[in-house]
Image 1 (cartoon, chains in turn purple, green):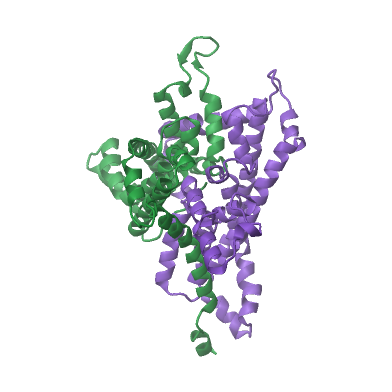
Image 2: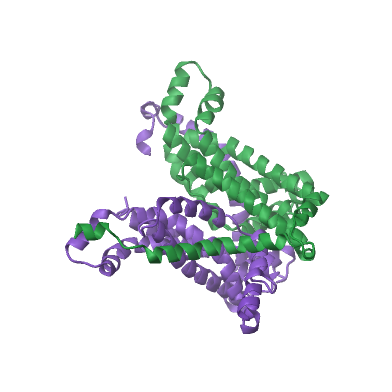
Length: 296
Length: 277
């Protein structure tokens, strides 16, 4: 957007340029007070020992303490499973309303609903799933009464890894729909026609042309989904009451009261999360850049 | 050949995925709704809703959440509109850094944000290098926690609000509008309040509704900062009641739906409405 700079501002040399920055001071002040100070405090804390000196011990402990390592692992597993599941399902849904041949009206209905569902998280979402798949939930009861099949007798439990994953899926796959629908629109008709003229069947078209073009965008979106569930706290807490020790729950416990008896280890735990989130966002934008070459 | 392409067969699998998706969307809502209607034995009715809405605590906490959401939206607009405007008009070189900052909330989940806020603002602000206290710890008094939570909510809504406003300004050509207003003798305040704001009202409305949807049911910041908002209330209610929380859950869903539906309507589906959790 550099080209939209006022021609006038080119004549005023540095001083006017510098003066222009005054206009964005309030915004930077806000960012410093509510984003940078809190993060810097956590960052500095994670490299400080109780005596206030620099140390790498807290970071090392993230990997050596089973309690912390297993929490990270659990969070990563849940996020990976829901990113993959939500990603695949969301892609198929986005496919069905874009190039899949469904009527236009269904598309706008799906997009609106996806917008709602991707924002429907936290406590209400947990309650909704208890009413659906809990011990006396709607689906549980129907399966028991109609098919005489009690899912709780067959190893299912809503307050478990699987249950939490199913709950997360509710906001995961709609997000995938929202990201993938525009990307699928970018597939040009000519590519398909060209492929068909050369004798390719549908399978070959998808495997050799469409999917390779979409792949960075699909992977990028899945990484975004990963981060989306990695940072989730309220849904998990409301659903399992802290019994499933994912990393956000552990950090929550650390904020409520210093359960680790080492505030700086808590800081390091938080920074570890930010690090993983930052990596996933970086991966997303890198992959997004790769797709843009093809899809407009 | 081209005829064979055009006369596609019935998109069977597309319908399968679509119906599965609809089931995933609808079943939890249906289940919640059905459950919320069964408070009275052997009778379907809205008793749970009556009881939930009549609870003075509900009114108080929900009203408080609406208040916080409104404050968040107002302050966000006051902060973001002039910033985005200024960057478009005078300071394009700040665009990258500001856009980078608006993406940071995606990297810092709410739980980390509140953790950091508590760490920083639970100690008093002193005059540098002395023991003289300027401000008591913000977490210790009501005005302080209100300040913190509104700031925190602004951070959570920042990516959406900024994107909305910036997109809105791109479509109305703020430069020409500004020059026209200036040549008619308008000052900066008049330009922003009477020329720019009305022209980006669609963007403002969709950013505001999205922020509203995020803030009203928010529970992490509110509960850790000890604020008596709707999110923590609903959570606590769920600990010892069954039907009223279901009723409120369904109501929350309808609210979210209303917000997103309006955004969809006013923007014609152009706005990406996706939240991070």
